[in-house]
Structure formats: C-alpha cells, structure tokens
Amino acid sequence: MAAPAAAAPNLVAALDSEPEPPGLDAGFPPPPDKLITHTPGADRFPRNRWLFSHIRELVPTASVWRGAGPASALPRAERDVGSVQFTDADGTRRTFDEMLALTYTDGILVMHKGKVIYERYFGALDGHTPHIAMSVTKSFVGTLAAMLAADGKLDPAASVTRYLPELAGTAYGDATVRQVMDMTIGVRYSEDYANPKAEVWDYARAGGMLARPAGYSGPGTFYDFLKTRKEGYHNAVFAYKTVNAEVLAWIVRRASGQSLAKLLSERIWQPMGAEQDAYFTVDSIGTESGGGGLNTTLRDLARFGETIRGNGRFNGKQIIPASVVADIRSGGDRDQFARSASAPVLPGWSYRDMWWVSHDSHGMFQAAGIHGQRIYIDPKAELTIVRYA
Image 1 (cartoon, helix red, strand yellow):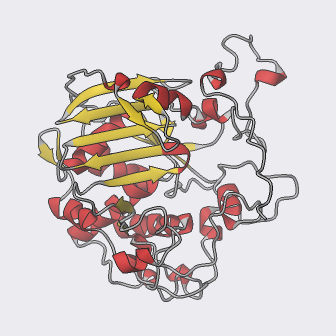
Image 2: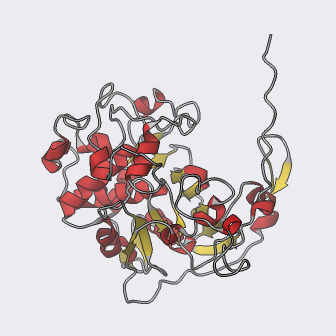
Image 3: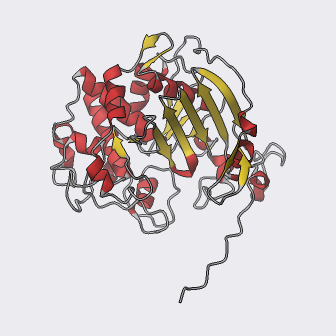
C-alpha cells in the first residue's frame, strides 16, 4: 500500500516575492524586518531574491575589470518571445512570460544569430547590476584552464601535485588535472543540499558565502578545505562536486601566476568588450570562489555565451582559441557519465572542461548553476540564452 502523499509546500508566488530594496522605502536605517545582513539564514527565500543581486554588499569581493575601452555592441532585433506558448511538464499550456514569473526568474536574455531578440528583468535585477552566477562560474574556470592548456602553460595530463604539491596525501595526490577538469575524481564530498551535514555547507562557510554559526571550528579558507580525503577511484565515474572546481581554480592561479579576477579580466572580459565590471566573492584571505562566486550582468553573460557560440570569436577578434571551444563541444567520457548519478536526469550527456554537453542533434551545451542560472548554447539554431534566477 502506498504511503499517503505529503502535503504540497505552501510556496510564495514568484510575483508576490518581488523584493523591495531594503532601506529605499523603509527609511535609513531600515527596520529589523527589512534588514538583510550576513547572518545564518540570510540566504533563504524570499530574501535571496534581493541578495543574489547584492552579494558584494554583504561579503568581500574582488573585481574583474572591464578595461577602459568601449563596450561591444549587442545589436537588437526584438521579437515577441514572451507570447510563445508551450506545454509544461504538468501538461499545462503556458506562455513563455508566464513560465518566467512562475520560476522566479530575475533576468533572461535571448540572442539569435548574434542579435538580442528578448530581454526581461524582474525583482531586484536590472541591466547594469551584477547577479551571482553560482556554478556557471565553474565553466569560466574550466574555459580559462583550457586556454592555459592551449597556451602550453598547463598540462591536463600532468598530476595535480605538479602544480599543487600541497595536496600530496589528499584525495588529489594521485589525480590528474584532466580528471579534475572533467570531474572524474573520487573525493569525500557531498553536494546534497538536503543534508545539513553535507560537506557543501562547510565549503560555503570556508569561502565566506555562508555566515558561520557561533562556535564554528571548520576550515577557515578554501585552501584549508581542499585538503580533502579520497573516496572511491579516479577516472571511473563522473561525479559533480564543487570542490573540484576550487582545486582547478588553484591550479589555474599557479599555472598562470595570476589571480582568477585578473586572468579573467585580461583574457576574456576586456577583449570581449564587457559592459560592466564583474566580481568574485572571496574568502578571508582574498581567494576567489571558482566554484560559484562569479557575479556578472546578464548582458555580459550573454557576451561570453556568444563568444563561446562563435568558436571563441567575438567583438572582431579571436578571444578564446577555436580549439578550446571544439574540445568543450566534443564532450567528456559518455560511459563514465552514464554510470553517474546525473545520468537519469541527463541521459546521453557528458561533462567537459566544466561544461555540460548534451550530444543532441543540435550540439547543445550549457553552463549551469543552482537556482536556475544558465548559459544555454544551441550552435545549430544559432541561439544563446542566458538566465539569472
């Protein structure tokens, strides 16, 4: 006999959760019920609808300079995307605009054949404000690592300890850089957000994104956290674990001799003609979060997506080697992915250089982050969609 169904959660409707900027309507200072501070629980819904567009007001950050040049053009050819209808997973007929409201979208921008055809903002987000990219950050780090490999400054076949001798004796002591880049690492780390004791929470506290409770005695920095124990085997199965992105970010810093913020600025942000500075959240010693700490405007996220869709070429120049994009699009080991926990949700997919690759008839691939952050690229349809939520 089946167990009785659990009661449906009493969720706040997306439009009813539109945040009021704390202080603007409530006075200076805002009253306690309008105040958002960096304390345990500040990241919970609906306060996170404001928080995700105001991260640097609560935690330390490092800027990614856009440079002194003009912003690259984003030509427009507006189309009525919002009224397009589709049938959702529940069998309900909806419009695209209705879907955006129901899914707590903060901003979405659609580009087709190099032109902006649709751009909308909700909540606390607007065209010039950065929003946290969450795990979309990983795809930036993976791309930078692949660029360094193309330059001959990083060897994916080399051992991790060639670049990070500090990790000898940890889970990464016998791993290769490629295994880190494609997340085929056996490491003790749980990404189960439903488990309050999962390592992902200590990771977030080590990096400063989550406030530390009284009496906290866990790792104080990303570098402290990365001295993690091995669990299982390397190069056997794909396992999505954010700790791998932080190891790769450390490798990228060592191989380049630069911080992530400076490297991203010089190699991508300035050449592509970004409209605004981006920024990374940093830990207590200034180390950027390579696993989820990048914040960008929606338009600059679209510029990066178009750079990738254009095989590394954008703003009249080759910014990322075409060979790097080709390697990303080729995907990772599909057999290892098929044995993973991700396979039932994404059958036939793989993971390469910290990008998700569908291997469908359109060659679609994407960067993805929790809460609905996305860079969706469909080369055959000449389509790039970026979303913050």
